[in-house]
Length: 192
Image (cartoon, rainbow, N blue to C red; front, side, top):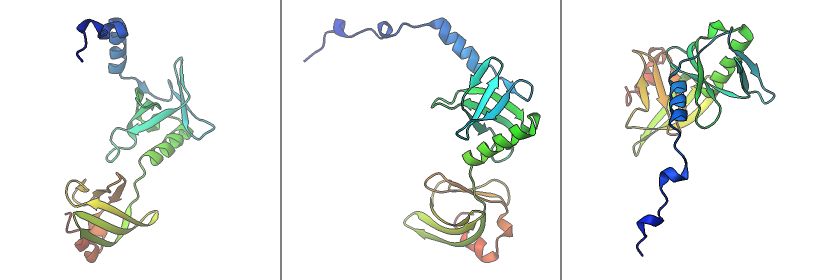
């Protein structure tokens, strides 16, 4: 059955287009707001989250994101709304610009978001059917995980620092490859 062209509703009729609202929202998104101890006040919520009061705006919960998580975790910290859009509220240029108790509160949130155990010992790595099965000791205890053999499962962050990402997206760090024993380094030859 063929539908009549006139029976299809015009998309513009469904929701009136507001060009001015779109321009205002675009300008707000492009504006960079720096947050510091003078214009922002972070506090802990009853549920253990972080709230923010800045200017005349209050946010009952905010997300804390690192712009450079591996190379500069104390600077350029993005504070975002806690909904699914995670719209940026502002940027903390240096964490040290906030009062000590607020710095610690944000560091706790960062540790939760960027949980990354350090691999202290490589017990075994087995290669089977395109996957590597790791058995390691980390700063949080014994751990077993799986990575893909192809792709970027192991990335060199420097001459000696490695980042390992498992198939579930969990990250592990080897801060200094050369601090591992010769036998442990040999087990990682598949990736280096």
